[in-house]
Image (cartoon, rainbow, N blue to C red; front, side):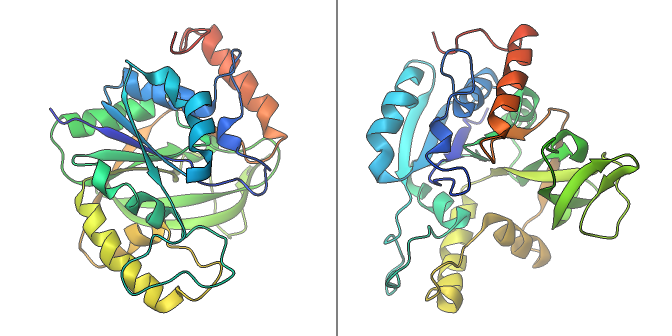
Length: 294
């Protein structure tokens, strides 16, 4: 049985939201979305969690978040830093934006030796999502994977959203097309593309399963990225683009796992009361205790 690591990307500041949104409480006793993700991962059999954070938030992060996990799951930290570049490259003067999710994952390469699952720190994925990907790797799988959510379980009641609409062929991911302004209407779901959608379509919410071979790809592809875009101030090395390149070039296949969980996240401050209400419903239904990690 494989030991599985949860890799949580929590280095972003959330510019639209204002502040370190990963530390914002959504549970009745100060719990964050990250707390619920870690709780679900522990329940699903994960053995370690690695947080990708900015070094200046380490003390606050440990006090508010990770200290409470002691004795429940092994915890380690990786730091995404602008100056952490391959030999021969330097950060362009004036750049403040992190190098993107591909670079974030690469910062954890020396902490992971087996299968691992990557998630966003500010998104709620649901218990079933962690279980399906955990079962996949605990049964010995060595392929990359992606947990697909049902489109209508990821939409916002506050307006249009952008989602990665997936095409799947024989259980493998074929394409992910970023589709904007998705929202429910009387006739189904509308978007900025001229396509018919009924809400059952699979979408990517950035919950990926990998093996350590990904780090070898990332090292090579990040150099290629820097050679082309390294002098720009806002270019990003993004994991969906990496995955697309690996699929289209035939180097890797990505097995699609399905989750029936509802996804929700805090994009804007207006989302927070809704998320808190959804968490409370799950507590009332018995999915979570009133206090996590007691």
